Image (tube, rainbow, N blue to C red; front, side):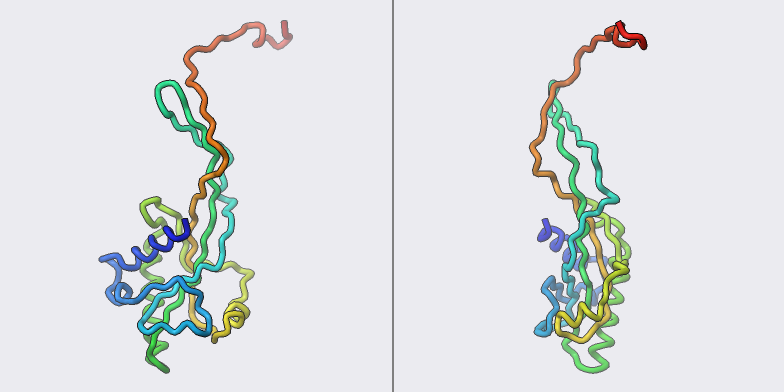
Length: 186
């Protein structure tokens, strides 16, 4: 599932309508540690968090008719936010490196900001909305590199339940028992 999401995001960054400089950049999903030094301009999308999205949690099973006589009941999918830290990297040095990284990061932010829903599954996406409780200084220190400009990309995916599906017949007739409808009982 995550590999499919990575493929979807990479395809979006390589879309024919995307800015040419963004399409020309390499796309990486590797962890940007102290040894991460790409040889060409690169957009790095480091998946750093997977969290259940309880706001989108459904409790009602999904019902689907399988044929003329039966329905299938499937538990609702879990919704999970996949959050990437998006950074830009340049092999240049000094001010040229910073300028190229900022330009590439800005193009990426602008382009991804066009898509509140991504991919054929129309997955909800949020750009540049970081958790309030995150300390970026500690994050970069843990990776062993100098802090750099970045933004978050959060995409919500649906995880199909592993619970077995239930099947039941279509209701063809029903009976009303009058004594059950009385308030006083029989």
